[in-house]
Amino acid sequence: MLKIALQSKGRLNEDSLDLLKSIGIDIDEPKRKFLSKAKNFNIEALYMRDDDIPQLVESGTAGLGIVGLNEVAEKGADVEIAAKLGFGACRISLAIPKTEEYTGLSYFEGKRIATSYPNILAKFLKENGINAKIEIITGSVEISPAAGIAEAIFDIVSSGSTLVSNGLVEVERVFESEAVLIANKNITDEERATLNEILFRIDSEKLSRGKKYLLMNLPTSSLDEAVKILPAMRSPTVMPLASEGWCSLHSVVEEASLWEKVRQLKAIGAEGILVIDLDKIII
Ligand code: PRT
Ligand code: ZN
Image: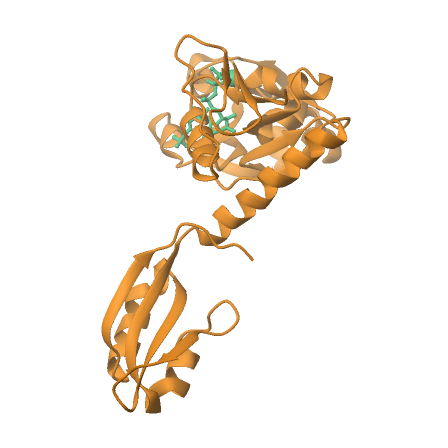
């Protein structure tokens, strides 16, 4: 049975399971099990540390995996990046003590840089012709400058608050990452069909993210204006109402612009506006 390697605990575990659940693949949480079969889909979860997932997928022990793109790049794993998943967003950046004056990349010439991502860093330094010493640290990289281990760090940044609380400032964003679905390059045709089904469902789930379904009654005379306010997927759905001169309008809107659209629609006479959660958009 096709296995999907998931992080057993840590930042990506919950979002990975939630994503699978939202596309109809219900898998038990890891707890003490390292293998768990989906209840309603022909797939089995293999719970591992995230560091091990790229190689497990490259070797085919697991046909699929969900892991940060940063881990795939660091391990240099030869796998297919089947989908970007839109969670676990972060970057790997160079940071220096805020008391230092940053003079551009040449600042790092001859300096020591502490990191858990030596391969991505070495590639970046080489591409930019910088000679620096890489100090490999596996945890709490951010304390390295204060501890006298290095003059700079190359580490994951998300909100930036860890840097601030350690008196550091981000000076170069080197690698942008998010969680990705990876696949072994030699999966069987049957496994490929399962992967395609998963990708199809993920696309539908992604399309519906941050969107709401809007329903309202509208004077037919305002229809042209409403269509301009609501540039829906193709065109909004319009249905006549029993009362003369009125119609029912249905459309999908971005949640971010919902209240602005509602204000504009009310201004052209919309009434009885319903805002409904949208689960999936299948096109
Ligand atoms: O136990 P296991 O080996 O499986 O987990 P782990 O401890 O190695 O990794 P984990 O769970 O911390 O992170 C898993 C993945 O989440 C990473 O490989 C990234 O792809 C992604 N991710 C997203 C992050 C962050 N955001 C993040 N903020 N990984 C780590 N951090 C850490 C970072 O190391 C730094 O210490 O958070 C701190 C910075 O955060 P801010 O918000 O203060 O900038
Ligand atoms: Zn890890």
